Image (cartoon, rainbow, N blue to C red; front, side):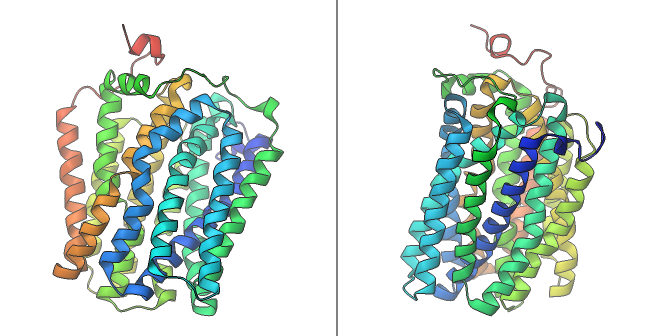
Length: 411
């Protein structure tokens, strides 16, 4: 485990502990995502309702800036304990409703919204906590390894969920996710606060300050807009697979779950490559990666059979996660530490907050025009939107030398 190796962040005890716990938690999350999609289709047999559930769970991400503000004001370990315990309660409640055969569609809707609210706080805190676990020179590696973590879970979770659904129905999948939240709580309690690389939380941290900071930097403005188009229209792998699996190919739970793991093969390859990077990739590369991903989405929509569709998905997964890792690393390294939580909150709102409006639209398009048209539409808007942003901000994509708030936001 050399100082410049792809696993160098594991030299740090706090990172190792946190990494193991979030791997377990992420596996649980993916198990629940697949089970929840399948449960909704079992209850309704309607892609529009699936889109509504996805929308409810994602909509609160529009308010991720609130979680980012809390991350800059309050101890991140304390916030992580709170959000993880909330996730434990909501996932456990849904699991018990399913196991006892009392679950109704409105239960799924309410709990999806509650988990979405929890994630709106949890997401910015988790992301901004990563740089505190390692010294600055290891931040690119830790961010990339965190993406390996996420995609290892994406590889294991859907396949495990498909197996569990076929063997035990959807209830145990939700209970497994509930238990996985406890791993994060245990890890946070084991972390040595003296070894954290952090600044003291700022009691007066204001959201408006982050807005001014981003507006004063064309490179960050461009990245936020690129991520808006990319994440809103291009990062819907579970929804794409769900509507293709059920509406186009007529598959069962096991085959549906396998598609998620196939996507993760490409994603994991991308993140393993990213662990070797030493610097932020920059906005220009992020733009190229996002356009590539949009083209991969269109390509997958053209596949005539389940086998060919599955073979096309790793290309989509590779592009999606290459873009994600590049943007995550860039936002972490090109933002002043004292405002990082709030900027990441806005960044995550771009990532997850606007997809809710698109999910019901894609469900409606699937019902009226077919799954292929809906997915090709998503890929086309991704390519067009990102290309327009690249043209508007051409020549202004480099960060300033001094990232401090005082230097960027001039009176």
